[in-house]
Length: 226
Length: 226
Image (cartoon, rainbow over all chains, first blue to last red):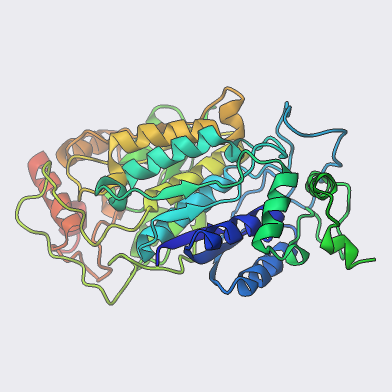
């Protein structure tokens, strides 16, 4: 069975990416990162999703001794989403964590090489997103090239593929796909804050709300709170 | 003063790279990684070197939950160097740590972005080396491109530079350069094993020995052991 390393954050996109990989016949192992997030709800969510999908997982703990992002620094304020996000993002918000996906991918590469997996799945999305540079297709193309030149498997002619199945889909299309694949959205957590219920105001909550609304599906996380 | 992040391993090359950066007028902060090495002598060496250079340092602790390298796995044997290494390496030895420099660079990028540094120094060398793919110039060129596309500073037009001052130098030339720059080679540690004295048999010891010998300089680490 072909093996894959799947980056799993506990959010909606990465859960869909995991079920997409499973559906394609991959034996998946999930990488979950504890990197000093403001809250650990998403880590708990990621574990539940991996368990539900009957996949193994590994938690990688990173002690980033710097901050520079409101997702890491409790003294910075997580911004309230402004009007209509979407395709035309003009600046990167302070929720951007410097080089986060580059760090995550580098670990995924290392794990893939060490375990014999030849494929990495990441749920990056460049449509309904916050303008993070490390979510765009051009970055992934360049990273794959670097990985090919910088790894043993790469120079030996077996480069590791990075698959971004959701990168050009709207949130609504991601959710519709996920519903077909049986993604347990009730287990996912998107809110940047770690309160008992999603705040409904941060960009991540807004994109989620917009996605379920446009898909014509009720968000099971909100339904269960009613 | 222009800031730089310098990757410091405690070995001869990274120490020279640090003094090179200082000599170019950079205010350097050293990144030292504790990533599950067989021994911590190199970490202690790195700290001493940073202190001697009067630079700040950060230790980043990574718990890699996988192995796949004799530098991480005590059950694997560190190979004895075979005859003459050098330019014509045909296979990657088991001391290769999957994607290690990619991981290190991703942290350096993150730290550079978070701290306002625009330059990273790494002492990679593709001449007197073990054939590690992540030590070759073509990898660095590709990684810089990926970093430019995947970071906030990159897309905003201030890409972070990665400088590899030693990449095409022989070990002898590196040592001669370092002597001019005042690198405290007596503090560096190259041996893959962590015994009281260098083993003299691993590839890293052999390259070091060859370098000092060709430079016509006595290795201060060996001198002090006499």
